[in-house]
Length: 361
Image (cartoon, rainbow, N blue to C red; front, side, top):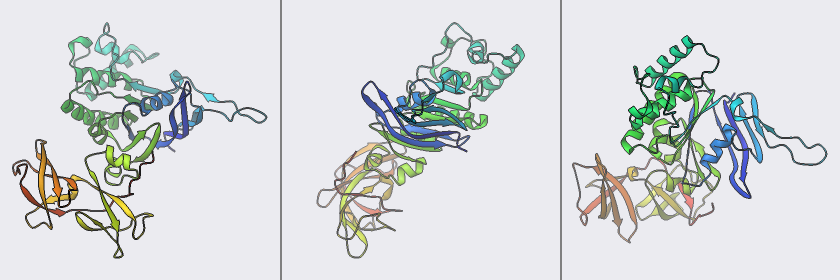
């Protein structure tokens, strides 16, 4: 049985539809992540799961408990809706502003939600969680004495203290610098797995999602475009907006010929299947930087028109004959100057195609 299951839920705020027909599920112990641009409905969806917003259509279940149900409308046979209040859902939340109590010690912050526990039980749970988050001995300190990363660890420990069946994290690392965000995301994943907590994270940062998530999805204008593994989102996007938002890449125009391959400015590209695209159809082919290798023996000549330093590698923009541009990577100790000529070899594992000019959202 899934720990979290959403079935075609809609959430309206005022007259505006914010969440539109979202369906997803998480198994016990899984970590999920919702990606997407600002205003796409991620946080509203999280608030609906927590119980802070009512659903207008669809259902939300936590384990075998129905916690949100919009009901079946008006008239004879109508079913009244179900809405379990947030405090009765067994859901923990971690916010982007940490929301620690400044006048309480670290230990008191963590034990705040342990109502009904004895002093000994609170002390034991606090010590256990401080060890889990790598801050043993920090119990007597106050939040203002901690760094941003340490405060986020304490906020996580406080949310985990009552052992919620589901933990929701709303942009929890957004106030931290990029390097710390990724490393902390991996640490938080380890803690959640150790505690066997099911969690759902909202972020706009792909590296956070890839570092933490077992399942991930992208939202756009209230709709969940794809719910998959992070690998699936990157390598097998089912929507052009997912392909554009996740990772780097370009869409190259091509067409399917009689020999069963796609003719593009990079040559004739072969694939296992083309979905519902047929011979003669014009398509857009997703080309990631890791699909192309700079190789002196490569089949295609190109010129470097731009490059970006990424530490371990350069990300190059290369222009092919005819003007089409692609992205490719190479180790940073082997750099190519802007304007230089290179040769490219394809390293495609599979083809991802979209109908040409497809722009339905």
